[in-house]
Length: 458
Figure 1: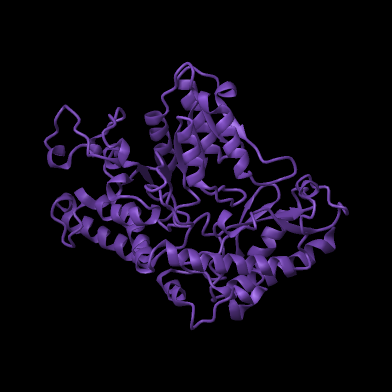
Figure 2 (figure 1 turned 90 degrees about the vertical axis):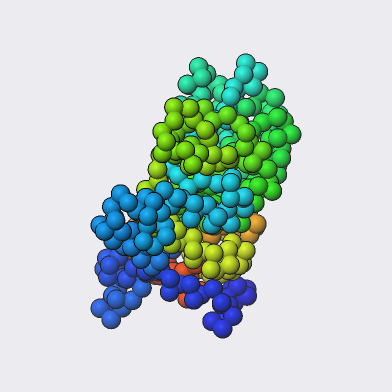
């Protein structure tokens, strides 16, 4: 079973793109329990769902722009020695963004940050009426999304407790059933102004059926938007064909733009003539932008929502990564490799003696394992490969908030880097552009060793 996912080096055409990235060493990641012979070897970095690794092209492009800043200064806005005039720097990203999210170039904009863009899109598309004023979302959305929903609703004079409809997994389950989402839309649709979900759930790694949900929302007369923070660069997207109204995403996770990197948004072309009421200078027609007219003349499409000139350094850092995605053939081949890597990780984890199959999902979810002191883990990410991306979320038992931190520290000490979500979850994400099957094997071997030590303390 485990070997069916693994590809031989000769067949693994995309493995060469690992050389496009800087891989932190065990020493640089402070892996204290690694032998001196191995301290300069690459760490096992399975944390690209939180912060992607540095592409070598990004470093080169940033260094080039620093040199241009030092030699051309303000003149580089219109006369750049390398042909990347700063006035148009975001336009180098837009066609690559379109490839990543399945859109037309005019439907995407490289701008802002995730939450700022989310507020911008909600304020632009959430137009409540007396009859239709609610926002339908997942109960455990990322906190920034929940804060945005509440503040936008309050700005219109409504109470979040009344205007927000949250959908939760069924008792004893970790993931939302698509049929429950569709049922909620059908039930509440006449009162809902906006349906907004995450493309991939940050905690569980569930990939929602975006096309189905979008259509169901539209059938009820609702606007449908998406937070793609954990989806962009992770799973294939077809925002234009799915008729999504708007979407936002960050780029420092799977898109490897660097900490706090510049973000992106999508607005479907059907809204191209929608009046932009939240106007900014950079969304103005470039041909007259520097004439400083008093009247706003929007760029047609998503780029009309640009507020300010984008950070050149942040933009070219993203550009370097997107060039690698493009050269790798885009999301289709990367998705195929991701499925194999994640499937291999899952099969090895399920073969571990520490794996606790959720035979009765309710008992696992409630932390009621037969032996409450038994140390182990289960996987709360959907098994269906069409319902997940690269991330597997491991829930550690007993659910006491003590086992997971010890496991997390033990993994890091041995050079395996994941990320945690308190109190009991560790997320591991083998990324198609730079992780290997051998790293997946090592991660599970180290996890087994760490759990041996942790169990001895219980």
